[in-house]
Amino acid sequence: MLLVVDVGNTNITMGIMEGQKILTTFRMTTKNTRTSDEYGVLLYEMIRRRGYDPKAIENTIIASVVPKIMYSFTNAVYKYFGKNPIIVGPGIKTGISIKTANPKQLGADRIVDAVAAYEIYGGPVLVIDYGTATTYDLVSEKGEFIAGVIVPGIQTSANVLWQAAAKLPEIEIKKPPTILAKDTVSSMQAGVYFSCIGETSYIIRKFKEESQYKDLKVVATGGLGKIISNEVDMIDVYDQNLTLKGLEILYQKQK
Image (cartoon, rainbow, N blue to C red; front, side, top):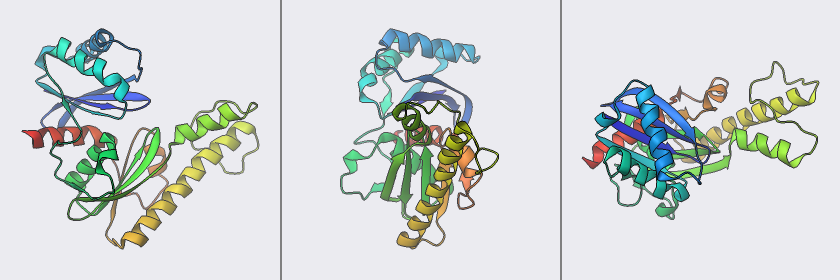
């Protein structure tokens, strides 16, 4: 079994895979202050409580955008699973060519998503990941990472509203029954939700227009991506586990 790990700014999302099959997924909050033992115990116990033997983990591959936790987290994998994990970064075989001005600046999560979208759905493909930041990344029909856009994530935008404005409350991110909001909470929900739909639709149109890819596939992923993809006709596929699938694909490429 393979342990795949996506370390994000807010959560660490993990999965146990056997070949291309995802057996289970689980997550924990990303905390810079945890020790390797804390991470190790949490990982070990989460796997065990899912009904799997932690000793059966044959290897681990990690994509991370949070460098501060990597020393503790990689040591946890080594101490509790006896494996040196594969880290997605410079020098790893990806199968795609990065054509941006500075390839080293590209986040590991975006590389993984690009590989997964291209390998699973083919190119040209635009992959949208709704996370702490929302990213839009374009891969050509030849497997070239051409360009990307980064905007504040849905939850991040909502957080700014209630943190910066003293009288605005914390809200649940969900689709309101109507845009004709009549109270503060529904007004905020309508603003966050419908502005994201408008943003997504416009950015996809601009990618199609300027790339001139008439057959461009659009694949969305990320925790809050489902509520947006349901409303945007130009999104062809919502794949909740795209990043975990991409990590398994990259693991196979290293072999």
